[in-house]
Length: 150
Image 1 (cartoon, rainbow, N blue to C red):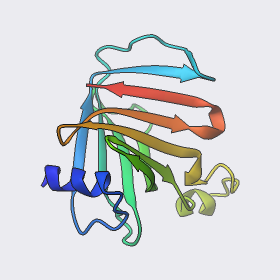
Image 2 (image 1 turned 90 degrees about the horizontal axis):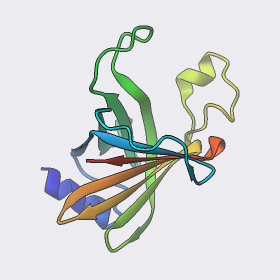
Image 3 (image 1 turned 180 degrees about the vertical axis):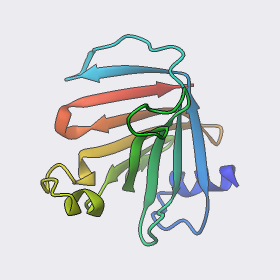
Image 4 (image 1 turned 135 degrees about the horizontal axis):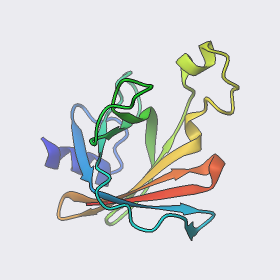
């Protein structure tokens, strides 16, 4: 199922019929305003799940999990809550997705509209041999990029 799902991404298909693809990372580098802010973070184990939009309709849902354990306050291992995204560009082996819409749960709690916007987030996938090799998470409103490596 994973290889077919990669095909949907490469083809720029924002309406995949079914599926998901995981990407596990054991290292990442954080950039702030384009400058390396952290160096390598070896042993920081994360899992991206990119799946058909869990709410139905256009696009994908992207979630990041911390594989190193449960957060003491949140009582789960979710590193980045599910974000609704759609493909905005593809070129050969690069696929870019950008968030769209709003986090309705956050809005219900009174979070300002700009803070509840999914368009503050995006990912860029590097795909080789039908496999995701690297993911860059962009957090646009903070001018942060985090490159996740295998």
